[in-house]
Image (tube, rainbow, N blue to C red; front, side, top):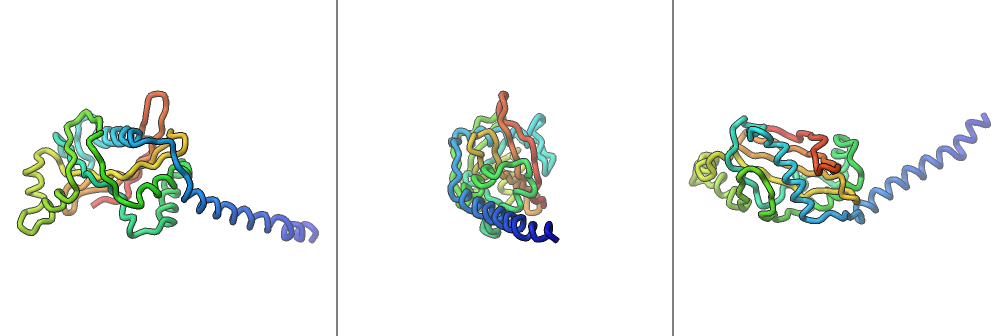
Length: 214
């Protein structure tokens, strides 16, 4: 009986305070977490991710077609952020990337609230072209063309195009999270989240999670 009263008096309030403190911390840090990462660091991540996803024989993971030209959208992709709330995105990423730090996830969400423009700072071993997103959409969705057929005529050997999100980092800039989508047809494509860490050899992908496939 005494033990029961003790638990009610001390343990339960402690749990409540702990939960509320954690909840408050999350909401505060979602607004204030920054990183020492630069735009140059983001392009190092893009390079590592593209080499990982199109490694070796340069065969796409969706079509199994050889890629002679990588087409990259100049506008960042953000996995339908307009559809989901911040908390839904937070819970999803935390569930699928338990080894990711909260700093990394928060920084990723904050940096992808809006679309951004990419530039030609990619250091890739394969040939690539950065194309305006509006041009890609006009090429594919124009009613006066055959869409993807015209796209492949213009970008021969491309096997579609890729979109990349902004990169989320932890404060020390030794962990990163990025989203990449590959579009290759009306019912061809996939979206992937990738978690990377930095060691003495550079950036490497340690976990890949496929978000969707068509």
